[in-house]
Length: 415
Image 1 (cartoon, rainbow, N blue to C red):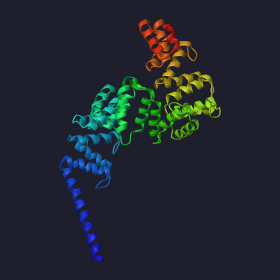
Image 2: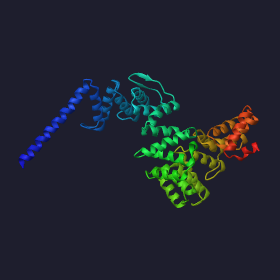
Image 3: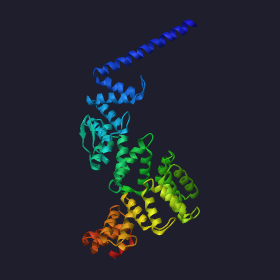
């Protein structure tokens, strides 16, 4: 028995010695400038394989190999700089190295570069070299991602879908086809991609027939991952019986679960139910608090609802200045209805002094989002020269678009 233990102990010492020697060999080769060894050593430090995890040392060796021109190291160093692994976050440096790796045809680097390019990055410095800011370029970002996505790369499909969804009217068909391929092939589809796909199915973007029931089924998959936005959207559909039979008790349970997870949509919807006293006690002050919580999460519809509350003194004291403040915040964040309300206020002087030029600007802002009443009011302003130089041709075109979108007042111009 003692002899067996001795042999096991001897074998363990031998394996440990081999491990130490191999670790030393990799380190020695890396120090001598062998790029594959530098990359291997960086990976071992990063993941804690063969040696104690140390992100600072991982970053050091990724940088060595990246500066030597290794595309995988350039990509890894970029990820470290982007995420702050072993360093402070520095998107400018990350983008610089993603671009270098992309130039060597590393697709995953191209994907990360395109993702940063969509929004642009501020300038920075690296090795005493100034890196200029990079302006946002969505068109170029799409151009980079599209061939990679079309070749079947699901990471590219995912990021491209999120970019295309910023303008679903223009990119509807491509977005729908892209997400169909992504959701159908990804082992564990991203929750946000499922939510976007559900929106495509429900709305019929790209000329497809709307299929809210299919959208509901996709949302359930995202909700099963405890995604609060998916839960809130499911609750809306169940509450209104959109695409599925109405089930308001289940909707309220979903709203409650989504609120606990911090969903601003759920907070806003429940605030509106409290305001109406529908399926819950009439509670304007409670509704105001729900809207306030959601607005603090930068949710534009909640900002607009706060504007409504301050404008009408609902759940709080009336305050026109605060109403305008929240309407402005919502409009600047892309809420077309808030921009339209501001247009009406500057046109009629209800909350502000009359200012036809400002009214036109806000109507136009809402019209750019396709909001039919704003298309109508922008068209009328152009037709009659209210707050802007008259342009009857463009004015009638906008009125036609509003009428086609179902606006009855605009349709009256064509009878």
